[in-house]
Length: 126
Image (cartoon, rainbow, N blue to C red; front, side, top):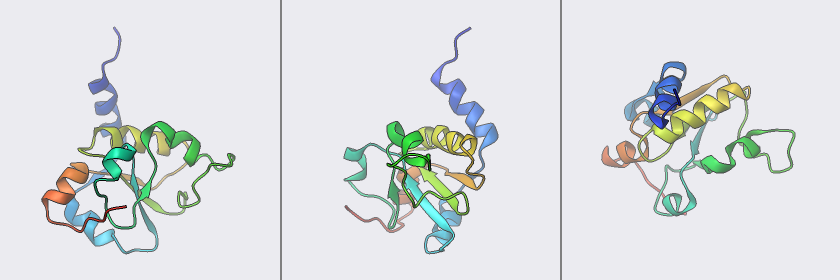
């Protein structure tokens, strides 16, 4: 039987730890943490978490691969990566991919940017 999108998300949910907005907010200004926004550019332009690195889901593997010239240096296996999208599905898939690519300290932001904004946390516009 073919897998559905929800099957991939559930598989990622079993493998990737998630954190709530309150915990993520406490990590916001730590030097050993990078927030990774995997939403599309149009979503990102409507606001993001301050200091977040924009890595659209469709380019993730290229930006995360240190052997490629397009590698984003902000993505480091030494840092904790807090990955988020709008609601948490795409970011779970992205976080699972990052773990498979050798990034051991990756967490998903439960509820994504929607939960962050809904909790009244800071938002910046790029």
